[in-house]
Image 1 (cartoon, helix red, strand yellow):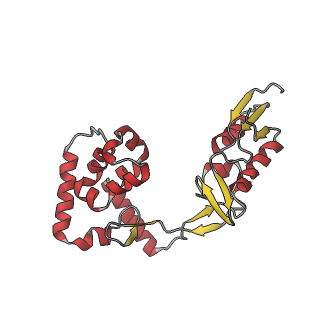
Image 2 (cartoon, rainbow, N blue to C red):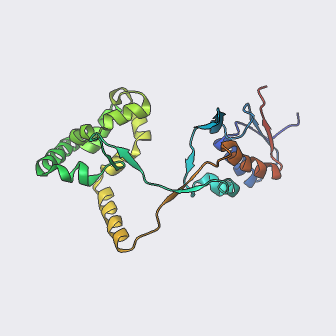
Image 3 (cartoon, rainbow, N blue to C red):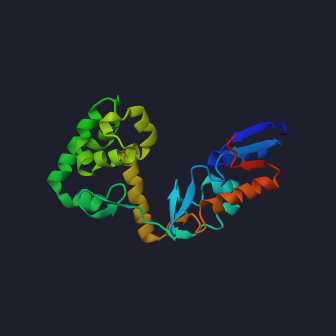
Length: 238
C-alpha cells in the first residue's frame, strides 16, 4: 500500500466532507477506507421484498453544507413541499412545536393565567439544571410542559424519561426549547406571520433521498472525490 498523508476512516458524511476540505487546503495524498461496500456510512437504504427501508437521514435542506461541497448529490433528490406538524395530547394535528391558537388561546383566560404564572414561577429559579426536565420546565413552565406532552416527547426521542437525562446533554440537544421560551422568538414569529400575510413568500421545500437509494446519492460525492485523485476503498474490513 502506498504511503498517504491522510487516512480517513469512514465514507459517511464526515469522511467525505473531511476529504473535500483537505483537498481544498492543498493536501495531495488522501485515502478513505470504509468497511461498508457502499458510501454513506450509517446513511443507507435496504431493499427487502420489494420495499426500501432507510437508515439515517432521508430528507435534507437544500442549503446544507454537504450539497455546497458536492452539488451533484442534490441533483437526483426529488423536491417536496413540507409541513412540519405533530399530534398533540389533545388528539389533533397541530403546528410544531406549539400551536398558539388551539393549545393556548382556545383554552381561555383562566388557562392563560395558569400557564403564564407557571412560567413566571419557573423563571424565578436559577438556571441550575440537573436534568432535561429541569431544563424544559425552566423555559416552558410546568403547566405547558405537561399539557404539550413534552415529557412523552423526550422519552420517545431519547428512550429515557426526562428526569433521567443529564442537563448538559439536554442543553446541547434541545436548543429549540430555549428558543421558543423567549419573548423575542414569539415577537419575531408574529412579525413574520404579518409579513407573510401582506406579501406571501414561496413555500419552503426539502429534498428527499433519490428513488435509487442513498448509495446512489452518496456515490455522486465519491465520483467527485475520485476525479480529484482521492483514493476510496469500500468494503475494506482489514
